[in-house]
Image (cartoon, rainbow, N blue to C red; front, side):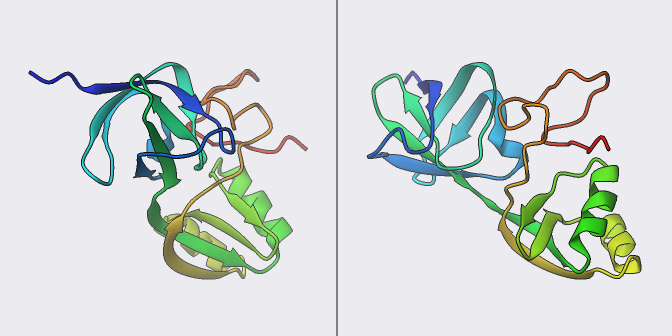
Length: 162
């Protein structure tokens, strides 16, 4: 029986070069500690990290044999939101929804309930399929899934304390 390749560490974006292969992971898939993955070219490997990682794309899994597997953000259904972005961001954050914030738009994962709410608030909402890279949040969410402020949220979920 062939032993599966193992990745015990992640190299940060900009700290590596020369990946042998790549893997595209969606938003949920980029939260991991121990999981079997398969690259775009079909190489199976086991990610076995000491703690949960929150990957944003551009990192590399370092296999024990020295090969590197580039992490890319996979495509997924999202909603692009324009309009009164400050007001709309408040409503999105109030629902503990991960949100990608850009100069002219907000992006959330596709959700028909939130889409209806945002349209009712006057937002222009466009469905698309693209990589989703939400803000990490104010409690170290860019690094791990948890934070300590009295109650729990899911991966990448945050809210603003005003």
